[in-house]
Structure formats: C-alpha cells, structure tokens
Length: 240
Image (tube, rainbow, N blue to C red; front, top):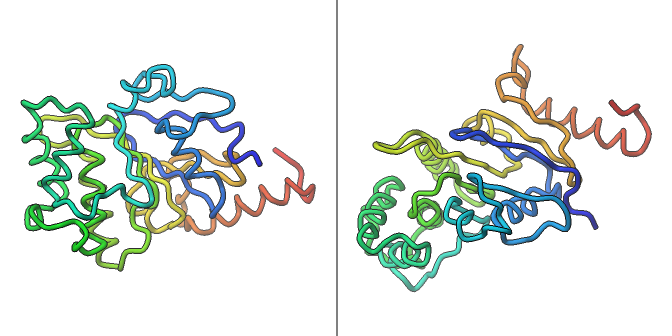
C-alpha cells in the first residue's frame, strides 16, 4: 500500500497550515516523515533548511512534535518531565530552567506544575504534550489531532493555546504550525491555509479565506473535493 505519493508542499515561516483529509488519507504518515520518524521510500523532506534524514539532529532541533498520543511519563510531575525533555532536546543547562518556565507559562500549567502527570485531566495532559513540543523553542510545530477525545471546553482551550503559540511571543518570532486534523471547525478556528489530501495524494492547497469566500462552508468544499477526486479515480469524471 502506498500510504503517501506525489505529495509536495512548502510552508512559510509563521504560517498556520491544516493538513486536512478523511481518516486513512495519509495525514499521520506524512507527519511521521516530516518529523523523521518514518523515512520516505522516495523524495526528501527539509525543515528550517535542514534535510530531515541527512541532518537529523539539526532538523529535529527545529521541530516540536505532538503526536496523537502525547509522549508522557505518567509517573513524573509536570515540571520534572519538562526538565527531562529539555535535557534530551539539548537545551543548554544554563537555559534549561528558563525554557521550562516559559513552556509552563505559555501552556497555562502553573497551577499543576508539581502534579503527577498521570493524575491530570486529559485536557491538562494535552497541555503538557504541547509544552514538551515547545520547550526547546522550535521554529516549527507539528501537531497531530491535538484535540481528539477532549470535551468541548477543553477543545476550546487547546485551540486558543495553539493560536497563542502561533502568535509572536515576547522576544521571539512566530512559530510555523502544521496541524493535522479531520475536524473542519478546528481548521476554521485556527488555520490560514488548507492542504487537502485523500488516499495519499494532495487534491487541494489554498488559503482558507479563498476557500470560504462568498459564504461557502468548508464542509461543502471538503465534500466536493473528496467526491470529485474519488469519481476521477474510478473514471466517472474527467481529470483536470
């Protein structure tokens, strides 16, 4: 099975881009290749000017990754865990404490900093997952289904947190965000641009404002593009 094929795109510094598609479209596979967890059988990936596979350490230092299941140690407390992550991500010892404090502040974790992660609510665990993704100050954030399984209030909080992370923090540049999701409301709330993939291929790459101009709903655009792509695949409509 070719999970992803003929997929190519660029993301500019400071952009918030949605990688959108139905379940099984190849979104998670794409993110795993972007972050160096899965080597592509062909093609190349570069992040912040570094080849992900030829220069893996430099590329990974430029990436903050939140997979669908956050990589947390439930027996550690929040502050200790973030200090551990900062150390393994090569944050210099002299800057480590400040890096942890900044991540705790930006992710709203001050009230639970000494709590054991395994005893936190799912919403707070997701915040800890975001904190580990930003603790080393990466240029690019890659987020895979960051609100899956959360209740409506938690979803709203995490979406606002992602918007805050994409905004310029004091003394720093805006972070680029690549967000994988199949939740259309999430795209409309957070993203500036949409890359739609289906069955491993890119079918659309446009600014969100252009897609929803004239009062069009993103749900309509999504359904039309997926339907057209699948009709073309079985020969029911001409390609192009």
